[in-house]
Length: 378
Image: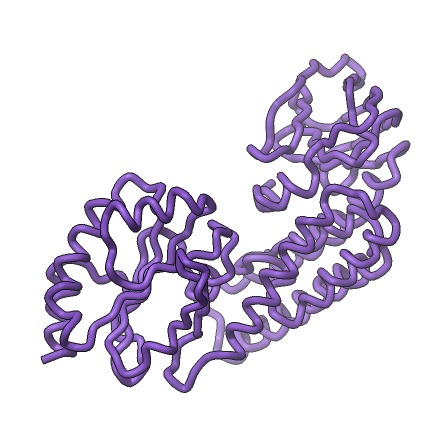
């Protein structure tokens, strides 16, 4: 089964804190499949880490013992026959997990309230995904008429909406539980997250506010607040899309002065995302300095956004490399909302904006960038 949570979300939401710890015992019986061993994973900032494995008894029984488990729910996976059962465990619990046949479809949980909530959630999620996959398989038929394809698409859309309604119901009913956070990060094929539209921010807020009331000191609250802030920033940015046809950016330079991208209107602008921490920044900036010197007097400007978290590293790079153009940074690194706004998936990345405010080029370097600037600033 594919990973359900992004690495960043798992790291901050389910990281074990330094609370008083205890033991957790997990036992049960797994029947109906050929696998002879069962594994236990701990989910942390680095993803899934195998921490134990046991051979099944002749009758399918197994047992794990965990020491030093936090009193704050932590995420673990039981892995059997290639499938994963997620468990949210608290120190002191005695948990029984049984299954006959397919692990995900048929397992039961006793002794862990949050883990039982995850079971309920995953049951609806897996069943919804299976229904959608069956419809997609029917699309592969070459003999389908146009009307039949339209009917299948309508059926698929209805199943998708039904599945999403079930997830929404679960989140609202369990908004003060960690299982609701887990639910926020589920996805179906083709989606980044199940709830990824700007309007879906209400569900993140609902869960964050409820958890803050039930568990005000819980370590996953900052993660939710960060996600909400990112979505808020994206909504704000998209609402500020200038008549120039690009999302505006306003960030501080090394002196703390806010510089807005749209303030450069009327010039040809190269919006450049980079990081001083990458090994190729010197070479790229050296090439860019040559281009800037050639066209700066003709109406060309560079708005360079540093994707760094160290102010000293960023400023030192700007000063040592003598970068004369506009350099800005919000010190949020990969969490900067502007990366999402411009769909930046790798560094460096750049966008060329003409004097009319239209983006006319992306990821232009060297001669390709020079030729385009010559065309625009002839």
